Image (cartoon, rainbow, N blue to C red; front, side, top):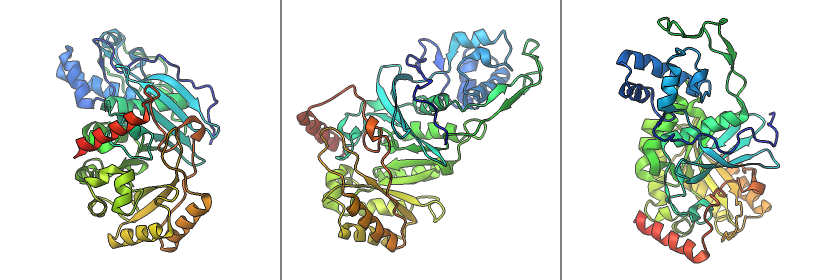
Length: 416
């Protein structure tokens, strides 16, 4: 797959997600866009038409300037510009790894920072999207878990990551929309040559909600964002190409299956209570048995849409042959259509663990494969720019070890 050069085309200082008194339309549904147009003075019929047109330009063409919307009357474009924006997160820093992985440090309009990562492969391109600034949880192996939760990201801030990535990858359709769908009642809509455009092959083919934060603790905003991403008249990414990862927020898992319907990944990482209590403290609230039963009940899970169990390999902690056999036993006990992603631990400053040796990881994988369960070993990507799994963290705060311990205690107390 062709990778754009190391000079990222997205520069810092892009339009923030809130434009003063102007309303940002990114993240709003069609009906909501129509609603704000009515509130601004359009009649309901005109607002419905404009909402449809604006939606297309935002999500199918990637436009951020109302003047580029050639099927909207020229006289109306300044009216829209005065009242609304089509925002993007501000890019604080953009890095490219030696292996082609890209990481962006983004800032919202209030200055809060979060990260997203794009991972290119030969047959796909995966965008790792954040759902929170910081994280609710305190998984011990995860760098993000050392941050306090600052706030949830809004639907617009989540969708904005996808739009920004498509900007950076240069994969919006090219050409002109003149003549396509113009309102015949608009006498001053553009009337130049018949419209033509091409939709270039996508580099961004998959989305994983595996960035900063626990998606199921920001359910409504994540749901709203993914509904926009999956909408057939816009970004049109299939639900089969979207994966939501959870550390095990059991009460929300069935809702995620029913109301969002994307693939499910579960951060399992251990097969007994003692170890999982330590490295994924949410286990003290929702235990392994409860979690696996929720996986068995997950709507839509079958052999064609298997649940992915993420399992970070930690030296002398969760990587023994007995651990592998117990993982197989649990998957079979709950009759789960599952695969296991084995993730070599990605180090970060102050991390309390080491990565299992390659030989140990291979032996662990082989035991699971021999039981008829897929257990590929994930190739670490973006380690040199701290973009690999478990390494994402805003650079804005660097707490001491004592503060990290205090943060972990506060999070655990909040979870109950």
